[in-house]
Length: 193
Image 1 (tube, helix red, strand yellow):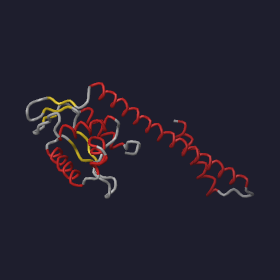
Image 2 (cartoon, rainbow, N blue to C red; image 1 turned 60 degrees about the vertical axis):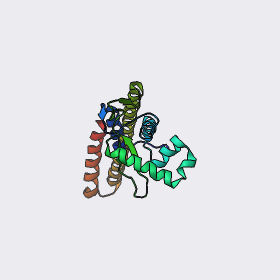
Image 3 (cartoon, rainbow, N blue to C red; image 1 turned 90 degrees about the horizontal axis):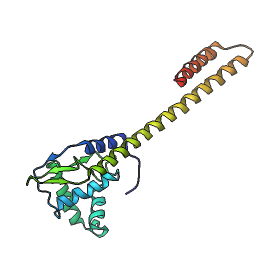
Image 4 (cartoon, one colour; image 1 turned 180 degrees about the vertical axis):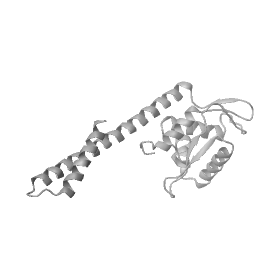
């Protein structure tokens, strides 16, 4: 799976998963059964800030040989669909129509049909994931601010250059000079904030 930055919507989904309390589900999540194994595998991806598709899940849990087995892939997709209907996982919207569906958990803690509490990630792991998400969002916000500052600076510089060019002409063209001074002044004030 390729490493990429989380989009704001993906970060929000991951934040909701981390913040979710104990979820009641109407299926059994016994250790060693497919539902439990798949939920545990999806949890491991989420703790790495990734949203797996069915092939990523199978590759990590059962090995790359099983990814090539079409029957097995369909079986896992059927189980994942049942898990979605029971509220354990959610299917994320596709970025492109040809992409495989990506999955996320609705919570890291569940109470199954047998009233047994199933914890897929420790409190410490969830806390670390929350902190990492916060830092990713802050980093993304800082990058946007830097780009805005650079863009504003370029507009100010271009407006000042246009104003100077208008002033150096034998006749001052007010249709160029006044708007360029106004724009440069306005964006200088914005840049100052």
